Amino acid sequence: MKINSANMHYRELNEIIKNSIGNVRIVNCIGQKYIASGLSDRKIVIDGVPGNALGCYLDGAEITVNGNVQDAVGDTMNAGKIVVHGGAGDVLGYAMRGGKIFVRDNSGYRTGIHMKAYKEKKPVIVIGGKAGDFLGEYMAGGIIIILNLYDSNVDLGQFTGVGMHGGKIYIRELVTPKYVSPQISVSSAQGENELEEIVPYLKEFCTLFDVDIKKLLESKYTVLYPNASNPYRQMYTHN
Image 1 (spheres, helix red, strand yellow):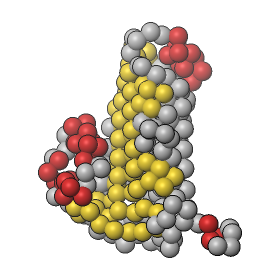
Image 2 (tube, helix red, strand yellow; image 1 turned 180 degrees about the horizontal axis):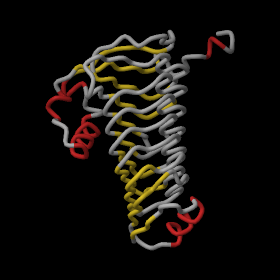
Image 3 (cartoon, one colour; image 1 turned 180 degrees about the vertical axis):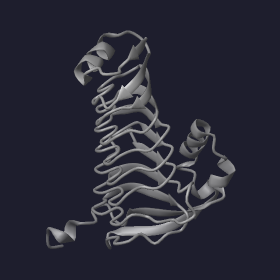
């Protein structure tokens, strides 16, 4: 089904999608919010720029955006995949607990805030460019990968991993994150053996955006992770 969403109210667009059968292509999208909210077992292709909370509560559907996306993409996402052929706004993947998000270019502030693994589910975000401040804030599970593909000046935002108590953040190139709390460990990894956990996601990113996988596998990565299972307990109780 093809929907021309030019000048269409977001409620009307979402109602059409909800009542349609099979895959959907939306053309002339311009800021309509909540697209594909809670959808499962569908493929949605969007030409244009969808509004906030694209794919919120997504439950298995696949969304491809040929353009940029705004804030809160994949909010509380449970399963599925979102592919962005452009850049993303703030709070990408807020509280997502499953599924995958691939962004070709940069993302804004607070990417992956409150991400969490849930039972067998492990959420994954891969950013081709850079991310803004507070990357992985209060992260409780899953994987975030920052590839820094488009700028030789690796400038990681401030307060990366602040409040983080689960999961891992991989940053391509060796960097010294600013204002990392003592509860976070920083190490390095290189080669397929040390990067085994993220190799499938690197390969999928390369297939989606036509990037040379060899370049990514030969690079060194900075890895951030909590240094204890309960790294902040000393801040609240006497131990």
